[in-house]
Length: 247
Image (cartoon, rainbow, N blue to C red):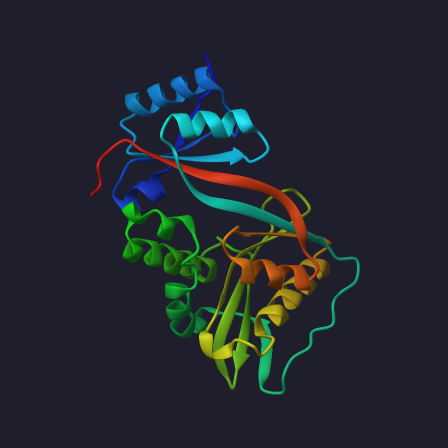
């Protein structure tokens, strides 16, 4: 039996109201692309995600020739931290682990923090559904085992930012998921302080390497991560292929 070429995504499908799948491979040629498109037809897929190796020109050319839309440049940055960083913070700023009571203050931040993501760039998903997705992601990070910890920045006793921390993969490495900060707290060192606190949390748990993903168009996030000691680890390209007219 041949290996599956795509994975159906039930959560994405239910949330956005389309049958959505993701390609298994990150490289393909013309023959593999035909097989993938047939599988999408057989399974009545409305939208296919393809995360392509940016260094493989054959893959990129094949996707473009088959009307896949380039929607994002995915940058993974990594840092190896042998020493626990010192957290610099203003007198009225506190960094701590979050709890469920913080959600009421943080949910509005998640609503507007990810406008660079592919789910906003591809307008067929709808900005309202995209915003709701990130709010749900943040809520699950506090209320389920979706995240292993959430770091919170508190300004004048009010939660103003968050960083979600994950220990799932790769083995032995920490992963930063969502990073969000209120506009009112920008320029005060809150974002870098949360990242430094997260690095300390990973380090104290025996993880001295940490990864974070951002978008190629999100220059401010890249600068933040670079200031905190992260360097580019990989570059990939997100493509979407739609099989239905959503207009």
